[in-house]
Length: 199
Image 1 (spheres, rainbow, N blue to C red):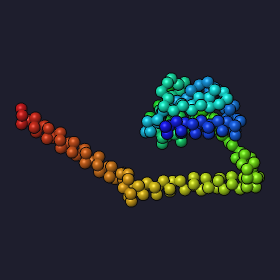
Image 2 (image 1 turned 180 degrees about the vertical axis):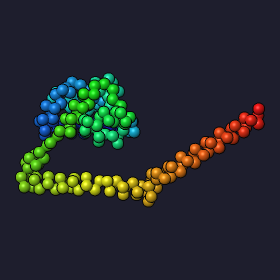
Image 3 (image 1 turned 90 degrees about the horizontal axis):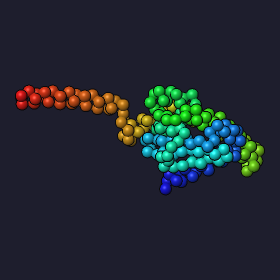
Image 4 (image 1 turned 45 degrees about the horizontal axis):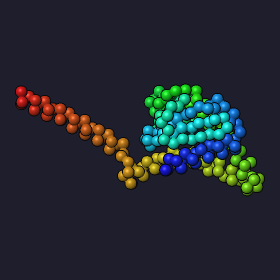
């Protein structure tokens, strides 16, 4: 049920983008009547995107054939915006691509080139001054967030590791690995002694 709702929302958003940014339809012409499937391993989610030359269709629980099938994790999803990163992600093992690489690059490039004039669209509802002010404030907020993104990530990581104990600290992981290796060697030595005694 949730997947159906999410795919319906994604489909509406995609078709809304096509109306807001006419150049997106031109960028996607090479992908017309082709299916791009995406599987997110950590969420066990498989969906597909089909552009018929006029509208986009998003399918959930997609397991049929596709012209291009991308298998990756949610963490790497943001990096797919940059077409030049696809090859690097494939080589590093973070992404598995089966089918037409050009189709994946075409979709990636089309969405990376999106440049919607939000002020023009919002001016119908807020007026020119209000729309311009809202867009400028949003850009400033986004710039501030990007500028402090790394520090926010560090604070969140420390909060989860030290205060909330939700995730494991890297030092604890190293200690666990060392203890596991020591236990493994002790078990191997014990096994050799038992074998020697039985022989």
